[in-house]
Amino acid sequence: MRVERVLCPNPGPYTGPGTNTYVIADDGMALILDPGPIIDSHLEAIRHALGSDSPVAVAVTHTHPDHAPAANPLGSEFGVPVYGFAPGLQFEPTDTVADGDVVRIGSTELTVLHTPGHTDDHICYLGEDVLFTGDHIISGSTVILEDASAYMDSLETVEKVTPELILPGHGERITDGRSAVAAYIAHRRMREDQFVSAIASGATTVGDIVDIVYEGLASALVPAAMHQVGVVLLKLAKDGRIAAWDGDVLAATRLTVGTERA
Ligand SMILES: [Zn+2]
Image: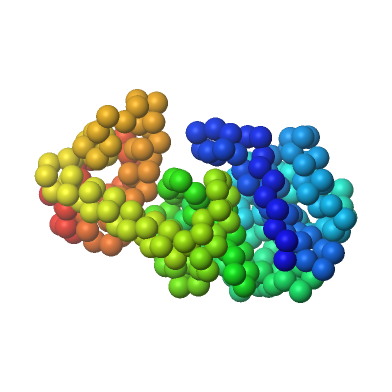
């Protein structure tokens, strides 16, 4: 198996150095994973990375705009199927894939792992000695969550099977995959504990928690932090660690620990 990373020229606060597109080739065949946004120079770099290998499919880990929009155009250009878990913005799979499905590239087999949390439609691709993680695990940062409960479950799924080599959707390759996943899980647990202790020590709103836990955060990042705290509070309420909560991050709802509403 030959894996080539093609770094998309879309760096930014949410993409780090840019999206990693991977060309995964074996026996003269190639799969293009996460082709990214439609940027002509990037599409040209992907064609170049294919070399003499023939594309057999284009696939995405999820349908965020930094990963998926070039998938359908490349699929049409090469006349190959486009794999994804579900349709999304600027993305329509020709073939949907589900947890446990196997994608073949020559003699290489990649197993689909459904890993919701960053998005509901997120999947990872597991090879014999490599895991392609998209935005489930990235290099050098944590990820933005849509669903904290699903995300923790998906981290535990991946922890059981990950090889040491992780090729993420953003940033450099990770060569200590097992400890990287363990560190992600520890980080999530730490954040949950911090939020519960902030509430136990008097924080009654999402804004209070952000002020306490993310002290000194640049004001431009506060709305994103509030949203993320809200996502985690929904998990904490579900887990019974805080009282039921309506999910409105801007409301002055009184947050309380435990299952009894104050
Ligand atoms: Zn994403």
